[in-house]
Image (cartoon, rainbow, N blue to C red; front, top):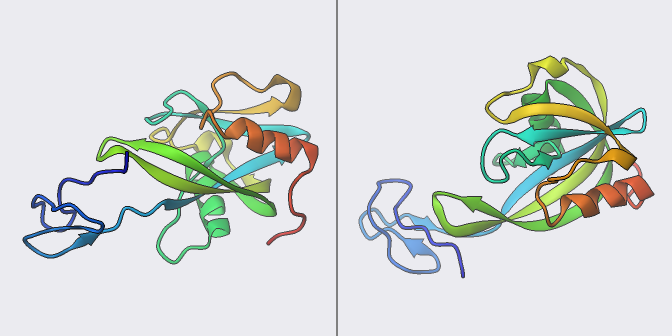
Length: 175
């Protein structure tokens, strides 16, 4: 079932069916395209940093830090910005891992949005891990590769991403 937007984000009026879904009052078109995202797999001393999500979807799941791309932002910039915002750490992307497609359950869009998540390997440059954003992250923890936690999120993709990084199946050098 395709996502459904019911109200205009510009004026709040009810929307017609589409695509695109169009507001009959102000004419704003709402395209339900996949949303670009970028996450970082941060590795230090043969451990990987994961964050426990503080909100839905996947609340309390262990995730790679990251998020939605801003307009005009390259996914590498997104990954580095989101890591700093969520964890307090400055990182440098060192390798491209790949893109995974995931369903993102959003209470404002029914039934869900599709997101395209670019994953990158990164190394920490500095920062303050105690400065993580409690609105986004309830906990950060460095895990040994052999002791990854249960409850990885997104549940259908993060295990595959971590396996690719651990095995070295990434594109070398900064893209």
